[in-house]
Amino acid sequence: MSHAPFQQVAEDVYCIETGLYRHGLAACYLVRSNDRLAFIDTGTDHTVPALLEVIAALGQTPADVDYVIPTHVHLDHAGGSGSLMAACPEARLVVHPRGAPHMIDPERLIAGATAVYGEEGFASDYGTLRPVPESRVIAAEHGQTFQLGARTLTFLDTPGHANHHGCILDSLTRGIFTGDTFGISYRELDTDAGPWLFAPTTPVAFDPEAWFETLDQLMALEPKAMYLTHYGRVDRPAELVGMLRESIRALADLALAEEGRDDPQRGERLTRAVADWLISGARAHGVALDEPRLRELLAVDIGLNAQGLEVWLKRREKRAAR
Image 1 (cartoon, helix red, strand yellow):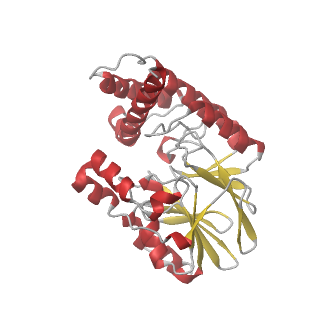
Image 2 (cartoon, rainbow, N blue to C red; image 1 turned 120 degrees about the horizontal axis):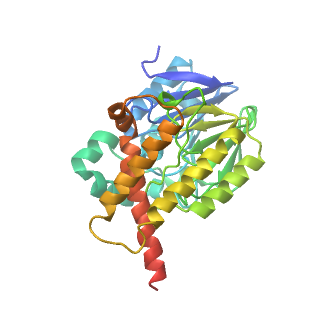
């Protein structure tokens, strides 16, 4: 029996807790068909032993894994890819073409993450990043399909959160593995009104207009469910997408209110504005948790969203100055 928390959320689709920061913050998924397996997102390098336990708990072996598919190369989604590939001898890594070079040579990812988290913090939260041999990497194109037993997995190019982001449509369940593209929805914040969704504007490639176009693309597929990395399955996505769109626009507007005010305090102002917006949004949705607990649950997102909005502003300002 596996010690890794996981649960079946659809037919032969398993949601696995990655253990990053706290329970319920980040998941990855194992998909099975005719005893062939695919992982979609991997968690961090620290998650990989748990993923191998889940394979064993299902009565299978790492040799049964055909595909490892990080939705994008942010470390909570792709950090374990190299170690998982090393453990799964038959697997191919399927990744967005813009992300493929970072999986083959992760030195820039390591340098960037170390600059943000420090060497000790990076090692503690993410472990290490192992390169994936180029011969085992598939740089997937939009619409490219991958057969997994009786089900077909279709790669979709989905910019907005990141320009190297792809989602995966599962033919059997008509569900989409969305990485960060369909937002964040923590189960602790569900209310009688249903799930509460908001956009992650994590550094470094937030693009609101591209994101709106991506959501149009996903909704045109009429999905029955979305499998979120943060966190779990949400149903009736057509009823939820408006909430996500509103959050993208509202967070962009928070940033635009600071455009042209590039002083040392802008980051602090953005952090306060994002925190206030998220907490008021949760309250409007009916979340009754006390404020310290609510801030605890949203702490990672407050910080990363504010950082990402400032990066977006700097990019806009740099373009305007040309």
